[in-house]
Image 1: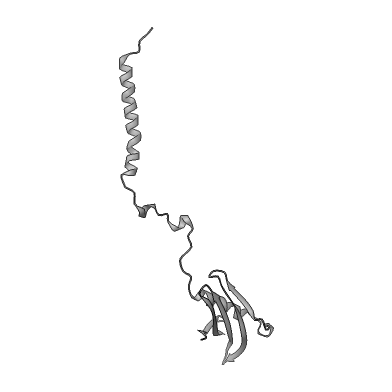
Image 2: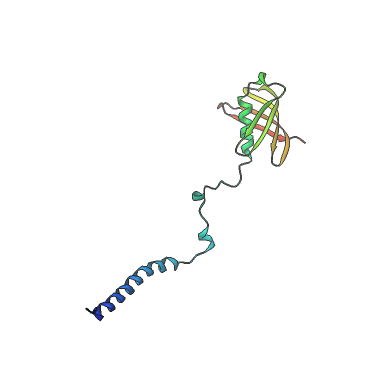
Length: 143
């Protein structure tokens, strides 16, 4: 029987030591930065979080668009319903009348606004500017 050389055992153990050391050093370097709660929080782009609050004007824009696109003579007793999917609010536009203020076409209306905060009644006036853009000139809570 042949006996293995004693030198080859030492060489193997040294090689194993060097390989182990070379593999653990990069891992230790990655962990040397340290871990904190701030770095553990994922960014919003990765998680797809939604921004916190909507602009309060979001419902006003939806109401303005409904008022401007309505056919005044065809709104019945039930009114014209509107809904804002972004805020979850909804309501009904009633008493829609059209008038002229000089060269400006205006529409007066009342609307309900149902949201998580409750149900409110608003009185408003939307007018078409010379640039053919509708704007709200008045939007006030009644009562």
